[in-house]
Length: 380
Ligand SMILES: *Cc1c(COP(=O)(O)O)cnc(C)c1O
Image (cartoon, rainbow, N blue to C red; front, side, top):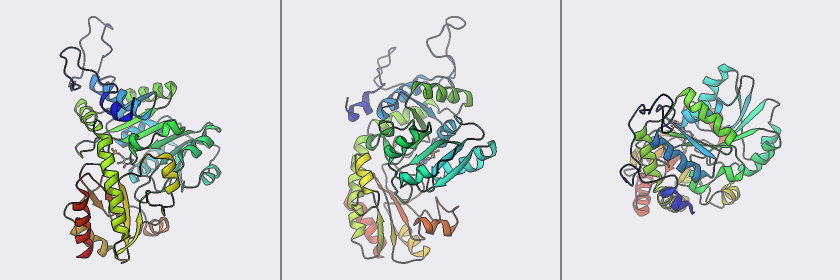
């Protein structure tokens, strides 16, 4: 079955009791049993919920995994993955990973004896050289936020496998439509479904997809034992969002490519970071492991003051200034003062996250309107 058919049909069945074509929202905490222990596979809604089951089966199919498990947020999903580790284990992660992911590793799990080492991951040889005897998990994010750096998933997984190290790929930016890390050798895939999977900026939700039955058993156990499960309404919203994932992402990628070209041609723009540009350092890897180049891009200005960037943000009318990404509407953000404000300036500048770097989450509006909006904001 093609991806575009799976988004709509995988795991989804008409409701057997009514024929409802859409998966019902099973808003229930418990299920009546015929007698003690005699039930229909559902006992208590932390453990199983039929709306969640359909979504989980759908997601496992989209990522080509053995099973998927859903959580109350992307970070709750990550929390379940890190609980596969033990005190004394170490995580190797990219130095420009999502700030909230780093905060969880650094502020929550470090105090339980799980430490994290951050490195640039663009060069697989450097990843290999950074492995310590207690490295148990390599955490890849690609493309990264907001610099759109690329990590060669297949190369890192190949090297990790020979050492018995697990690899988890945060696939939030690429979506399962553009990139399937399990096919490239990853053990686990994480999504903040809050972003493209939901796609309408109306729900917070997370997913872990497991490549094997063994990992699936462990994550399923943690999902129930730690209990960070999503509600059925949220599962319904993600299921509904996924039905149009490919259409939305196609249009958003197309718009982003045109916007990247426009920005390159604008006199005030110094640099455009978009993996679809042949000048982007990760272009070849993106081409190898992604179907298209995504709809996130960043650019910075020749001006060097934060104020210059603030003026551009204040000047857009269609692009709304907000955190998050992946919705149908276009967003604009200023990482140095918003998502990455907690990074010391020196660290930021070293990695190329300048004071005027502006990040766009390109939506599915008409591209001419989006370009016109950016043009007037840059020209004013
Ligand atoms: C948003 C995000 C997360 C965290 O997900 P939440 O749903 O906000 O908890 C993790 N990774 C990436 C890449 C994200 O963009």
